[in-house]
Image (cartoon, rainbow over all chains, first blue to last red; front, side):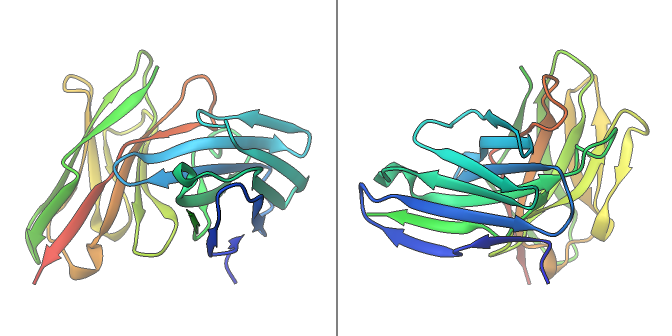
Length: 115
Length: 114
């Protein structure tokens, strides 16, 4: 079984709809991240969480919110989806500890299309 | 602020040929640098990382990268390309403001010709 899972894997929605992307991990890592990937732009950090009570904005958090329901679960919400949020979304995790936080483990991604 | 620039959004090589993917970094402090690979329809996985020890870093699948401070470069190489190397490759740098924040380059798609 995959260590980092994302649901759904693909989603098509309409402008103005609320949508939630979910991420679960069995790696036991404290730190979790949400990125979006756009062609030619690489990955950009949306939100990150160091533990259940510690959530931080990344470089492109506008229009997004997150919830860390448990150590293993980190959800990303789009309250009112817009077409320029069409992208590939990745969840990632990392350990806490010297030298361990550098390596992030990625889920398979969610392809979101907003019409 | 740290950043990385990948030169060439698409590189195509013949099977068996040398692979060279270029990355230059900008950092006001000694950087931690990474190469990640994304195979089709998969998430990213770490290929190798430089953390100020040896300047030549070896990774998985015979990839290696050399840190050159004088050139602010961290190019990725593989002596002989294999069809299975076709993927997108991302150079990245750790943000000095937070050990957990990684800044990714725009990516280079590697194609392998038979």
